[in-house]
Length: 259
Ligand code: NAD
Image (cartoon, rainbow, N blue to C red):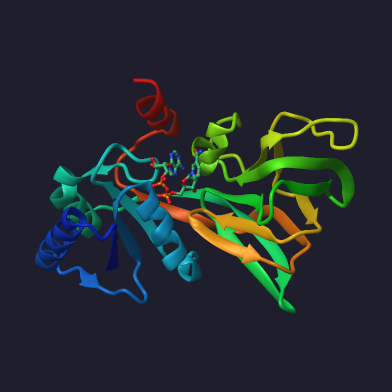
């Protein structure tokens, strides 16, 4: 079993990372940052987003596990004081592999075609003032949007930015993507549905604009000056999480937002 640690970079996470390496050596686990079987993120949800993008090219073979140094995270559910137990589990236990859907964005820029994946969401904003965009679903015109932006989220990302703009929380066993509006302007020319919509895996949405776009892919900003159409759909690839004990999604939602 080969592992790689991706830590937040602060003193506490680095110390935990060193401790993990120490413990792992006792169990004969091998550290490998190029071809790991398991990636352990130490920090918070933001750290898991970074780990996902770092190891995106290995999604078919790698699984992720998250340790949180602050409050409980959606992707980071092991406490820092459980680190030794986690190393033992990785060395000795057979995890349950849980797969979550991702959202894919496809576009052209500078004559090249790009295919990007998000674990939480893509957020589309205008690089110059208000975003004006036509949404087409499965090739058919749907609505003309004008406003601050659009959040196109995965089910596991539905509790992040999507939730802040009034989108629904979706269980990650549903292969779907959600499109939520950020402050749409509605008048006779620009008319949107006003509520978020959930698309199944076999549907796609094209967003067409006339102006440069700021496309946020999770925490990463991509400035697209010459892109006019972006196609979004549920990705074929999924992220795998190694679960060494059950922690149902709805319990995580309750513990993060209610109790
Ligand atoms: P950050 O450090 O500002 O983190 C934002 C917060 O979002 C953190 O508290 C984190 O725990 C939480 N979070 C991240 N993923 C989550 C998830 N799937 N479910 C519930 N909470 C989640 O920013 P970052 O670390 O760079 O993370 C980028 C993320 O921040 C984006 O993917 C986006 O979802 C989120 N974000 C939210 C808002 C908002 O709610 N208004 C605005 C911008 C970005």
